Every structure is written in C-alpha cells, then in structure tokens.
Image 1 (cartoon, rainbow, N blue to C red):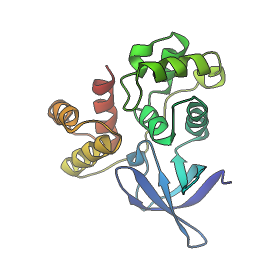
Image 2 (image 1 turned 90 degrees about the vertical axis):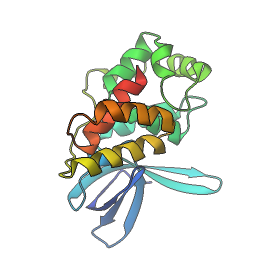
Image 3 (image 1 turned 180 degrees about the vertical axis):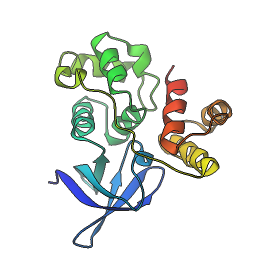
Length: 196
C-alpha cells in the first residue's frame, strides 16, 4: 500500500503521469487530470493502489483531499476507478459535494459512465458523508504549458480519454479554443460546459 510518492514527473499523457522515484523506479499513475502536474518538476503525489483480479493499478492525486474523495466514490456501488476519475476530472469538488447533498442527480449524470441509477446511488451512499471535505476548496491548479495550441490538443485528448464522445469534444473545442489557456485550464473550461 502506498500513501504518496516523491519524485520527478517524467511524462504526462492524457490519462496518466509517470513519476520517477529517487530510487530510480518509474511509476505510472492514472490521474483525473494529469495536466495539473508539471513535467520535469519534483512533485509530491498522493497515491491509491487498486488491486483487481487481473490488474494492479496506481492512481495519483494532487492532494490528500482529492484522494479521499476518490476513495469515497469507489465505495459507491457501480463506480469504478475510471468513473471516479471522470467525476473528479473537472476539479469542482464543491460542486460534486453540493450535488450529493442537494440530491442533484442531473448534475451527476453529466459525467461519463454515470447514469441515473448510478447517480442516485452516489447520492444515497455519500449524502452526509462528505462533511469533512465540504469546507475545502476544489483541486489545486499547478500546471502551465507555454505552447497554447499543444495545450488545447492535449486537453481534447484528455477529454476523449475520460470517455466523452468525439462529437461533444469537438463542440466544446470551438468554444474553449477562443481563449489561450493551459491544458488544465482548457480541461476545466470544457468540463464546465460538458457538465451543464
């Protein structure tokens, strides 16, 4: 079991990061929004190990609160790691907590892999159990990417990796592409549009 890994982020892809520990081992960590991390920067990444019958995967988080929310989502029947990452990808922890506390099933069904029954199950299982996270802000933004067109391309790839359709991604690309932003910023903007 791992709690966190300190190391150098050596690679960032639309669905995961690679962090090289000081001992020389590179770990692939799946992340809700990998572009919040900076490449070639020493980082402190919180880690959750998921062991399945035929797979052992590591999931990386920007802070302990994001990891805690991920684990709470995994306790919901019908939510696996991929769905939990898709829910966390927009970085709006307060919006998620508010939706759960206010029985806002419509908000929850906007995420890929979350239908009406699963959204109702999220509310049923988590309502009243997110109090310790309710007062905390959303996920921390720590990315920067000087090449804006590359940042947009990376953001669109990440949205596809999260399970959004090419049609939806293309539609939001036209809107968010008007502004120059970081990859993380583009992803956040796109998710705000896709989740409405």
